[in-house]
Image (tube, rainbow, N blue to C red; front, side, top):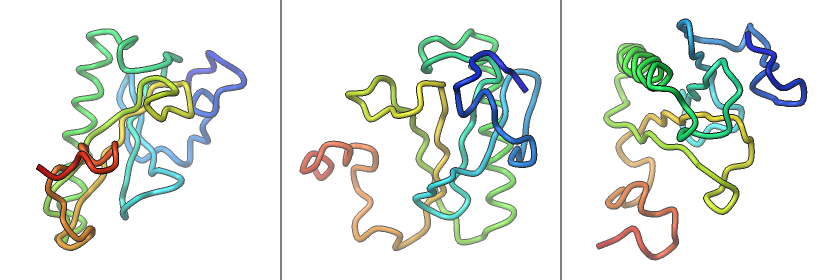
Length: 128
């Protein structure tokens, strides 16, 4: 695992938490999941947010996201959709300044009305 920033949680992740990895990225289950199997895809290189990723890292993240989706769907037949998201900057809610992509499995009835999805980041703006 990368040790680019000794104070960074994701640069110092316990290898036993890793559920999937490739040369540039790794995945762990979220420590505070919003749904079961909520997973984070994280670059091995310390980079603050998505916009700092190289083209190769973006492709590596995409590879992991697709593999995770396949595994989650095979493991849990109640998963019928996904949200994929990331926070970039403190005003966008980022609290760990090492890029990480959330893959959130969604199930029928996990919220009263899912219409609008990620648009609910700003209260009252999700429904249209």
